[in-house]
Length: 304
Figure 1: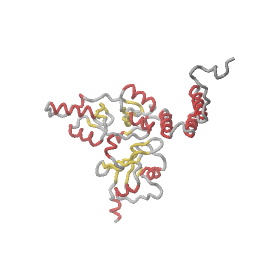
Figure 2: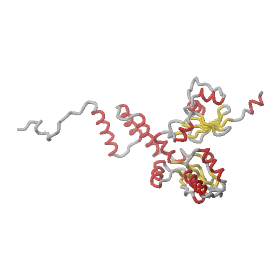
Figure 3: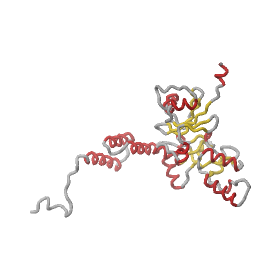
Figure 4: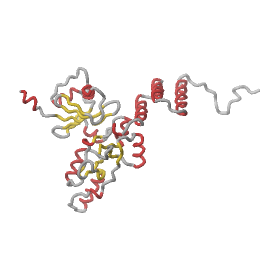
């Protein structure tokens, strides 16, 4: 009668699972059971994922992205859109040099093109299309202004209430990267890009323009500056000549969040001393970027 060793398949061996594999299999079995059954509640899913991190099966970055995916299915466009007042737009009738100036100064790759006002979005201008047309005009010694009508892409309009997971699917299928958000009355409420949606999952995405600008503070004009939330308060004080305390908070993001009194969303503003902080980039967990407007010190001069 063959023994147990002889009954195994040729070329195989019966190796008992190591003790380190037991938690892995247990956790994966529980996850598989959840995936096979109906979703009970998100809290159970997050609890299971957090247990996987404690067991060393997920790192913090992976857990954060999975959490972001779950949040995306519950988040609406209005929660992350760039508000109408902060949209960088191009006027359909603007001269070529003015259009090029807007493109170069902003560093963006896509721009809504407006007619009479910001409620009349007539198309989307891609910087690469504009530069290609400018090159063609130069090669043909054509001195006339650029004709935006020849290179505009059709705008995509979406409601404020659209869920981000649905929008991301539409972006992928249509190969669009920007959508114009409209309110319940048909007016333009803002815009949203595919990068905005992805940042809700993976966190802040710095592009080549961000890296090229380098440090924590970028001057836009004489009154407006872009300030990273991670900028040390000490560096902010040195740059602007302010005297904010860094005893309680090390970064501008922590200091300004405290001033808000809550976790602000993109587009919210608060005034601290003579500085107006407007949230440019943020997700559900932290702020990434502010626009800071430095107000004139007229009040101080009057009191002197």
